[in-house]
Image (tube, rainbow over the protein chains, first blue to last red):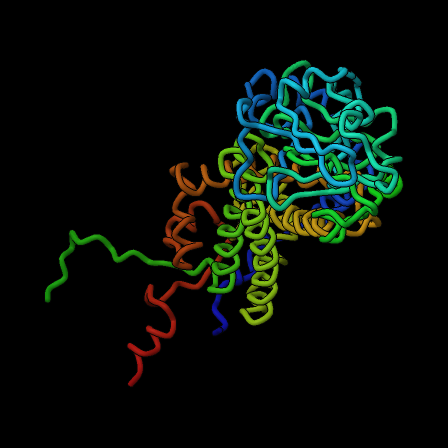
Length: 241
Length: 224
């Protein structure tokens, strides 16, 4: 590239009068503040939320931006659609009696409710989500697990998503197959009609659009775990929350 | 042919940006809008639902970011480094007139860049670096928990909101505002009208361009 003339001649007496290298200082200050945000973002966001939340409420942005915290992550080209008349939940594998539940049959099982915090592995958190659904003990009782079963394989209608939980994990007291969120039937983007809720683990273990639960002898490697995520996705063991 | 005394004087142009600077600007601008568009699809629930194809959009966002960073480094390395260094030096220095300009005195004489343009350039550079760092952490932190920092998502989002405000102001000044929009010619073709430069950048003393044509073409035309 030819050297082109672009430099101003520095001959005017006014030029650079009282000049200070503020540009580099400004760059470093902004960059430094940004890097600090990486580590103290949670504390800073608690302060800025007081300003930004009323602002987005007033401008109607709340309906558009994920201000309530939820972001919608999917792996397939489109989300599964839920049809109440044809939908079935299959419970198969190491069970005495494989069963196929309709939506009404699922809703007729004992109902459990809980308020828990949802943690995504990428760092966002939704506090105080109100869930309603079925505990796995009640869900699996009609099928009857065989003694050889030690884990459950959750197969999503969103192909090829799947994940695994072992029986001790699904027996935790705040684990459920949820069909309601915040008082309303689960919305399509949240996994309608049913999703796994295991608040102690990151979101990718909370399989959405569950269509089959397979009882198996040993836990396996789920969709994201095959892509490098932790198999034991306990919240807080790794990201300091 | 006789000279017509009523004919307007030929417009004189002066060079404001080298090809290197223009390539950097348009590479950055293009990448910004591709990253913003794909990023919003990943970020806004309503757009995520409407568009779907998340793995594809994620790949577009990631690889645009990588290509953008690579292109910026490449252009800076093989381009006109001397001109670039001079530009950086000019942006770095804020003299008394610059500070007066920022204090609201728009008549304070300005050099090739006015103080507002310098601040825009500094913020753009700092934001670009932070976007890259937080973006790589978002990507890598999903796989290695050591790099999963609590503020990464917040930083990446906040940079996006602030960038939209800055870019909106930049677009207004470069496309709409009557006294500044001539600058668009400078970042596109490299040259600006000498009278405009004198009026808005009084302390800038550029050499007049003999002809407003691309240098290799000019050399070809003037060869003997």
